[in-house]
Image (cartoon, rainbow, N blue to C red; front, side, top):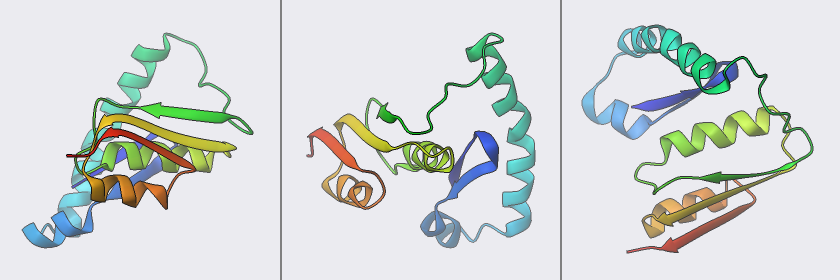
Length: 115
């Protein structure tokens, strides 16, 4: 139904929420429940190092593919919030519609295959 990133950034998939009739209380409960896991992963992956400084830099986001795109979308949104100069999304496979959606959200999209 969505995804979260550092800095309180979240992306909700309204189509999924409406299709399944997910109430706001449930969304809020899931967000609250997942926050400690996000913090744990940040500690684990960074191993005491600070987050990379992205302000004014070009950032390339790479994933093994895009389905709904929620995780990539929240990552791009978090980078925009941190004032990245340019955001490039690069994936080996995604649907044509998902690639097209990202063209309006980031600076460049590279989808190697769009079956």
